[in-house]
Length: 169
Image (cartoon, rainbow, N blue to C red; front, side, top):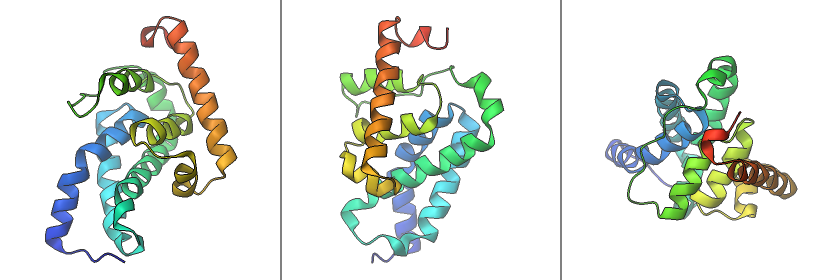
């Protein structure tokens, strides 16, 4: 187990804030709700810090908490978000290469359910394997594979129908 102090909390918060916020925003597509999800994520992270056994898995662990928190908020706010889903893009930093840049644009417009977006973010943005995703989300490997397949189908349809501007038309 990894111990955490007040100074470590600040360091962890500063190190992971942008990643957590972006993950929440990809799912929620709403600034205020993404901020709420980010805040709730760090509360959960610090509350459950003793549960993490491997220091090398912290990034994936925090991303999974952020994803689940955002999905919970999404489910609570479905009706409101349905009208706001396709709006502004999240600001993208230089850390992403062009392919991830393009993927993010399409990910921003994948229609619900959010679980499809979640697996693609974990697989292609966070570079986790399907097995790691299954472990992180506590779901079966077959479920991960089918979600990735369905999400890729949505991306394919979106791409061949003229890109992100034609989603939902």
